[in-house]
Length: 113
Image 1 (spheres, rainbow, N blue to C red):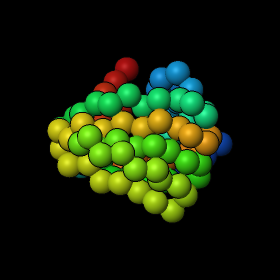
Image 2 (image 1 turned 180 degrees about the vertical axis):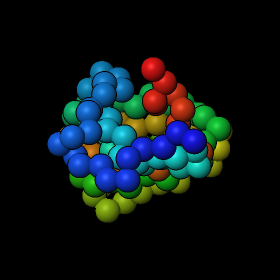
Image 3 (image 1 turned 90 degrees about the vertical axis):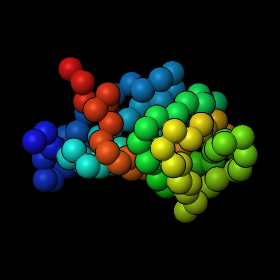
Image 4 (image 1 turned 120 degrees about the horizontal axis):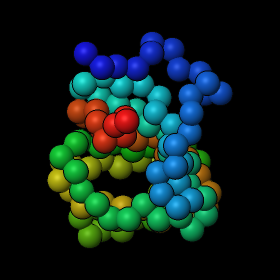
């Protein structure tokens, strides 16, 4: 079974470019779940998309306009959102920040060679 190391040290885990102004760091996974730290530069856009994974996201820092099934909300540090499978969602970064995304099952597309 594919899975991450048990301990993940921030300075040892590589950052990957996810999109313009967005980088991600995979902070643990197995076949059933994955946790990803995502850095957004101000103005970066996580374009609306959907996937079969359940997703729960936590705002560590910054300010984001999140759209979920057509409803827009401004989220700041301490806030979060939950997206059921196949729910259209996206985010616009108002103030530079970090999200923690948790997916179930894991995002195989994030670890593809």
